[in-house]
Image 1 (cartoon, rainbow, N blue to C red):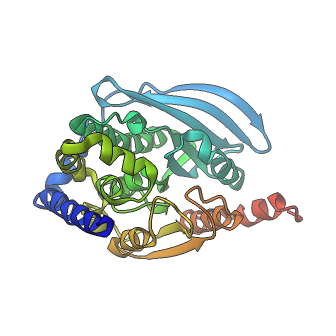
Image 2 (image 1 turned 180 degrees about the vertical axis):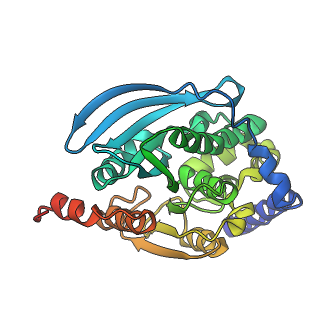
Length: 308
């Protein structure tokens, strides 16, 4: 009986996604349009300056009167530098170690708190929150373009889980991203909520009850599956967890397979929070190669206790 219910649910998800697929890629990209000339109203507060980097609290304006915040990590030294924009499902603090490592290697980082973190179960509200999260990544690129210490021709985006799905959309519709990292991602929130065995997703399905079909149809327009196959031919690193309780192997593999190349998929012996030291090292090396960071290996050796 349980298997039958899951199969019926999977068929329903395909039907919901088909509703979004009826719209062309160019029609879907209009969901993320905004006024690039609108004031960014960037607010910075310095937190620390040490070990070769300076860390700031940052916030900036989004459309419709919204704002988002996070951290800005800046390498010490002169000249224009590559940059990375990060979004994590657990908030900006979760990417801080990666951003500081990259700053010490010579890249500016903006870690963005998703304005979609407050999803509350309203179909249209949650859809709009996810759209706002994608726009927040694009507005972070706007912020970086205004900085005299950033080389906007060398800009990447990285996301974890929810952030990976939003980053996949952003990287597919915005040509300013020249590399992308997707950690613990899958093809969309409607698929995750509709089919995941994780207790959180099961709880959402139970809470929505008869409203589940409408909810999944409403949010499916932001599913990465409608975008990642149209992404530019930028290098893409997919990082997946062998023991992820909420993202089955099948979902990870389908996310990877749907993407344009060049791309690579790596697996780690962890749960959903991919805290393997190899994963952080792989990200740093991938981004260093894609963005032209010559100092990454020296920083990695120093952090691992070796000689610089």
